[in-house]
Image 1 (cartoon, one colour):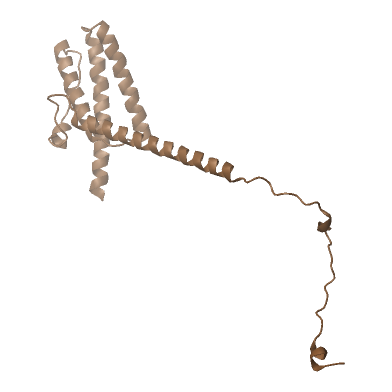
Image 2 (image 1 turned 180 degrees about the vertical axis):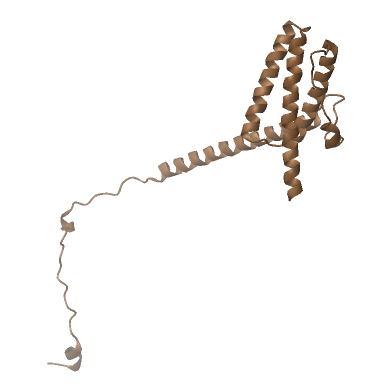
Length: 188
């Protein structure tokens, strides 16, 4: 007997059971072991490495700050502080050039004056361009060589004269850098 309910009950269409890749024929395999312990170990190792790098960076920054503070605040007795420094016009006054008639005492006095001036300039000059820095290092190396020779022969007028010339060049290098810095600041 056909009832209205049977008339409207249409069976759902059957989709053909296809397996084009033949996946049903593959053997069942258990999943691999849990990989989380290896991932966790790698994350912990990475965190420890970052922590060591961060600690080293802080230590390096603290060292730089201490070195700068020591250079600024631990001055030898008698050396002027940066705030009490003479004006630029006083510092760039014409320097005494070494001459052939200079005595040993006058060359030593000029050398001491130039050394004090270089110390003062060094505390005021910030960064230098690389070409000036290379020239500065070369001059300081030459001064160190002359100082080594002066330790063996302290009464050599020629060596003292050479030291004064090198210190004059180094002083002028710093003066030129200060002038450039001043011009840059004045142009702002």
